[in-house]
Image 1 (cartoon, rainbow, N blue to C red):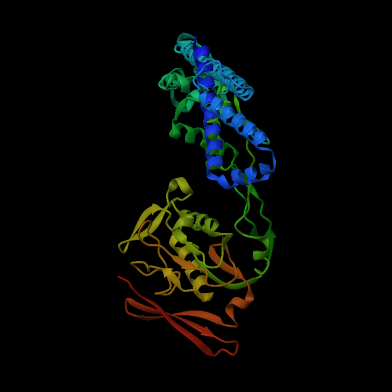
Image 2: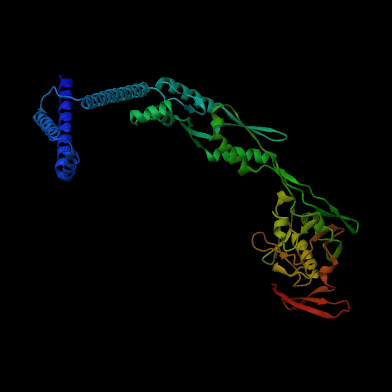
Length: 504
């Protein structure tokens, strides 16, 4: 029924179009009368009968055309039929295209709804499972339920506590049990994070994490006992540390020989601690024992052998006598002399007599002997050590070296002039001086036959041709001490006030 109405509408439009073309043609004829007149003039040569006959036929023909009913449904010329066919074909094509387009739309909508359904249920099935591509210490825990994950986490935590750190050195291996340095493994937090991963997102996001997500690895939060770790590393350090041997000088008759030093070795304890922490926080700790290869670091001596090559000349010496002052006192003097002997004082380095001979007690090789305390002689451990410091002081002055700290006795002593002695009281009075020269100073001290001698060895150039002599000017119980320097002609070229000593 609809197609018939459509055809009628097409026919109606075709008729209207034909009528419109007819009217336009008649209008053109009326607008050009001269052309009609010219045509009549041309035909005037014909006979009147012919003209009348043609005119009547033409009028009759025009009248017939005007009487045609364009509304008659049976009137359709060939052009109208062609137009009708074309319009019908076009209409059919449009109809087919619309149907195909609608089918495609319905198919797309159906596929989309199917995809959404698949994605929804695909994400829903993991509500109580661990998402795919999840690992714990690189061990796959995907698709585990809560109980299975709990068992896996517990097993892994136990393995970590039972694992060891093995430190491999060139000559020895050391082991540290992880449970000894780990305070806590926060397994509950990690377990919750693994199980809840992705569960708070939309099902579209969840689907992406499940089927398109990249690998995600978890490790435990490990709280280390830093104090325990440091203690374990210190044990290894103490057991392996080898201090370097400094080169030194040794007297051979009247000549000094160089005794070469040796390198020491040690581990870098701080570096080892950092390596252990790094390994514990890595994936390795969850697999097996941790192996750390550690190498020794060479420790060079502070003094180079070449620094000692120029020490070949005795620049000063002093001797005092102690014979007849008591056997124990002589033993104490010999003991103190041995403690300062072979001392190598590098340029700019300060010497402390107290540091060398202390503690002055029975446990350090000293004996009971007379000492001066507040002007009175009393027996005490180490009686006689002040004679060694006094002899050392005079050797120091003769080398042109001033003291940085020095005290006189409260009472004058018999073995040197007033103003040239140097006492020691542990913790309060000391003898100290610095090496002012560019060469090392080697101290050689020895006690033989009731006399104590101290020698300073260095390079001859340090004296710069001078000979130093300490001088003390005594007046009553007061002594003012100076240091004089003479050139090779015996001329005084240097004079320096040292200090004033007051005695009881």
